[in-house]
Length: 127
Image 1: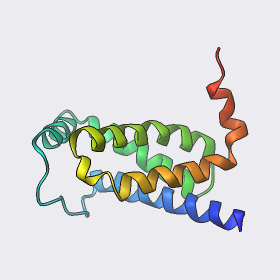
Image 2: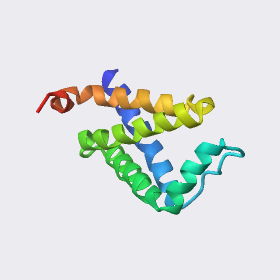
Image 3: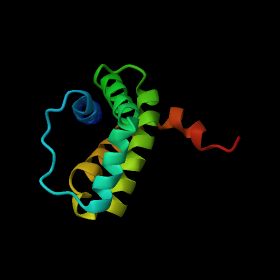
Image 4: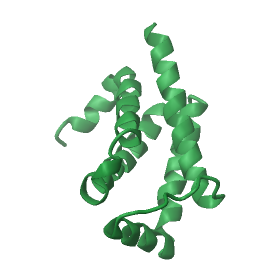
């Protein structure tokens, strides 16, 4: 049962980030009908400065790594930073959308990371 939960969480997390990462390069997910002013300004600046290519590129690469089950600890570290920023964005600029996607993605990340906690633990040790 634990292996099945891990595998499902890993594939769902990876597929989510493949889809959203790919969407920046080949748009196929429709934009929301309305977005708060600060959130729109923030995202618009990311797009105009091309910073979004970096962010969504990281999402795409990490998502693919999770789906193919290669370098999973690296993908988790990359996505930890992305998820932290996603949560910060939704908490500060668009709190009405904190549920379901950002919280579900965070929960999936923890389910997958739990299996690699021994490998990730050194990241929490002082230098």
